[in-house]
Image (cartoon, one colour):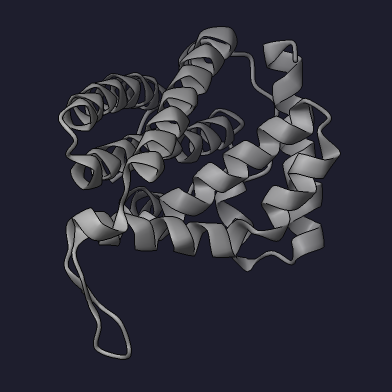
Length: 211
């Protein structure tokens, strides 16, 4: 399976629509004090937005005439950990675009641990857990009001930033392209290589968004 640039444009637009609907439903649950399930929907909304980063990277490479490993791309779109890592990379790119070196370093330094923690919180919001010492935990005892509210805020910010980005850069199918590094290749990179690649991506994107 592969995508055309028009399909990628349509896919990215639909992801914003779905993420916005998930966020709205998360807010309804939050208002009714269903904090754990509210957390779940806001988390999924953020995962949907993270897919846009994966698709955008693939689209830029496709338009530049670079071969795409579509099997790997589809796998990343379906893999929860990949989407979490991609959101982290997206945040680090934004920090680099804004020249916030401290935030950039902090995000990169804690990328793996942050993704693992978020995935664990998502599971805790849905399932009964059991610790290594045999202690049972219920979702409504693990995910509290503050954690749920913070996740809603992060989802709202992610959706707003992605919608703004897509508006500024326009459709991939209509854009004049230049080659851009493949941000889906981060898994096998050293920390220094990843930093260099992300700053390169940030420089290219800044030219298109005016940041």
